[in-house]
Image 1 (cartoon, rainbow, N blue to C red):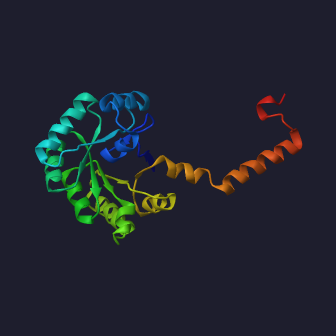
Image 2 (image 1 turned 180 degrees about the vertical axis):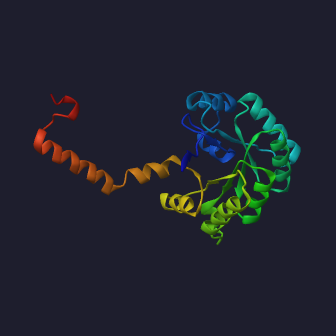
Image 3 (image 1 turned 60 degrees about the vertical axis):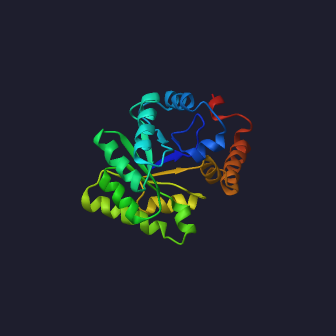
Length: 214
């Protein structure tokens, strides 16, 4: 399992236009390059095209690859124009993340087009009355049956429970707002357990820490 963060700040490895909007107006490519310098070349960096037509998507992709690096995963929405762009980019050995996925058909087409990642929108599907667990499980089944190299990158989460469900359904990777991970690790019962451990230690050793023991 891999966890990605939905942000354009310096700890990020995934970005799209809506995420960038949250960060405010920035020197986009300088920022992406700074992110790359921090996370290194061994981490995946996903950057989305903004054009809606195939030619425009390909121009956006070329610009991203030239101004950042050729290891970026170019994010392409799975539309009719997007599928064409994905096929062309894969012929050029570009890393591609197929995004804005709400249906099984979109995911299947993206796999067949050669996408390295497919990003089903978990919470948004659920809000639309679509079973995201079933959709992700179907993607995992197709990958197993036909040997696609595609990885499932769950996206659009509102809480840690949805992330857990995505992994259980077959997603290998999940991308989320940093607040979701923070909330999962700062629940009251967790913090109480830590405080209890601290109190028990101090009842025996006082304020002397482990590193201070002789």
